[in-house]
Length: 253
Image (cartoon, rainbow, N blue to C red; front, side, top):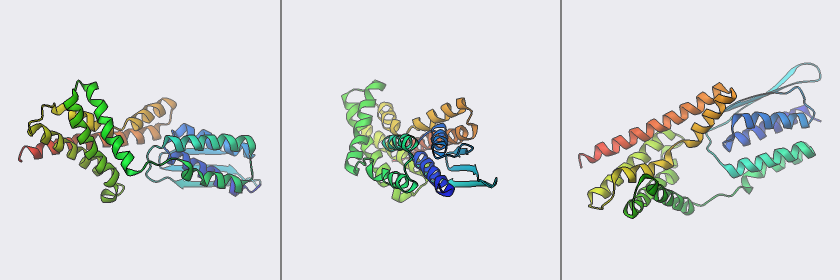
């Protein structure tokens, strides 16, 4: 069996898992199991959120290494689950490398993708149901729905404007949310500004990044935990700064 092809397959699997938001331990363990299934028992795998390194020893005793950089990515639970299922299948059946690569390349097309309208509905309804948790009433729920829809517009269509800069993307989204929330209250709508704003901003809170950071630091993956913690901190700063800027601007209107 071609050792280079097996390394490429493992690296592709790791990138697919990392790109779907998988935890570091999941990425490393999946790659190690896959390599062992294809006869590479002495493999070494190292992963951080934006890089994967896998190394094996060739029959002549020389190390062979693959390094793959992982670009900006979010969380796609369905894609992650499909990658997990395929990894288990490959470990159990060990089909030819070409067939395994074909199955792996087919995963992005199999995972469901919601169109922009459905995504906007999700952004609108999520704050609506957050509002009662913060003590809001029906009026607060209605206003939170409108503010959430505005945040959704920035999140869905703002990517083209801000590119891959998540900090400014989040900052502008939170600023727009606070401006609209204060504007609705100033129009005389009997709603609570704090409830509307917090309900809408809950969609921007980096819950997954915080959870992964805590989980990885307990597992001993210090570099990965620090990376996720830094990303979560920057997102939190962007939310706070954007909200403050939005409210401050409204004081002069």
